[in-house]
Image 1: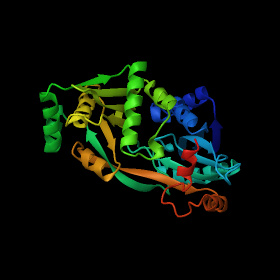
Image 2: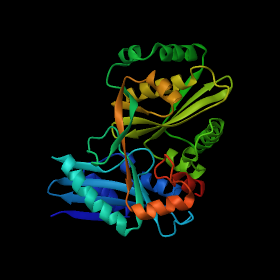
Image 3: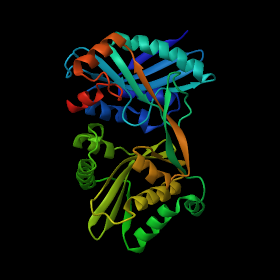
Image 4: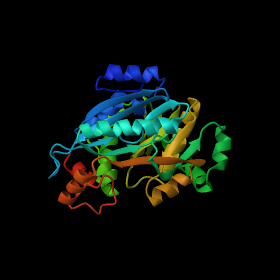
Length: 338
């Protein structure tokens, strides 16, 4: 026999996670609710059990009523960044395949027309059978001694870090993020997103940024120089790993600012016994920069699933986005109306 249960209760979901031995902020109710508010949606936790094993899956259900033609329709997506269905069983492929069939049936009863999930790149919980590799993400192996690891990084990164500190610039690791820290980062982040003309997907609201920085697992690295704060970055601890989350920098930042920020994150993560720093991917220029810091890569997969093809196609046609390369195709329109 198999069972499929859902909950919207934080304590119940936390108990399910604890029962499965999952201690990772990306799967927590607190994290999911931050993104549910940002998306104007609601959080639901899903537990599937069968003789093959167990899957836990946090989702945000986003009403599409703000879109012309979207009345009564819903988008399902994982909270921002990484998560996805976490499986525990001897045959993870068969477990995910069975879960997928039950999940899709349940989503259809909730008028969900599309599902988007980013799969956690450092978790061994299996993947849905229709997950596709989206990119190779950069990582730093933190288990080697610092000097040994630093010697393997690109010479441009090593030179930049040394030059930054030679000029008496400083970096600061902040575990207890204050309201002033939140305000300063939010202002710098908004300025950076405007400067680089970032898509609306990365322009998060001030309450969302404040809520993220209130998480125990979130840390801030800030760099200072003669101009004051020259750069800052958020790093999120996910189980035994550290993830680069968001970054911001001043227009007139000294050379090597971002390199020094990542170097500081590496040193502190190692001092806390963490295993990996996940740098991610991004645009061509970002990938080039991260490749100089990375010691390896990991595959990063996504699920892009159309649940109700006729209604999905009709909505995209109404919005004039049928030829969009994004998924779901209506996503940019939805974010504009948040």
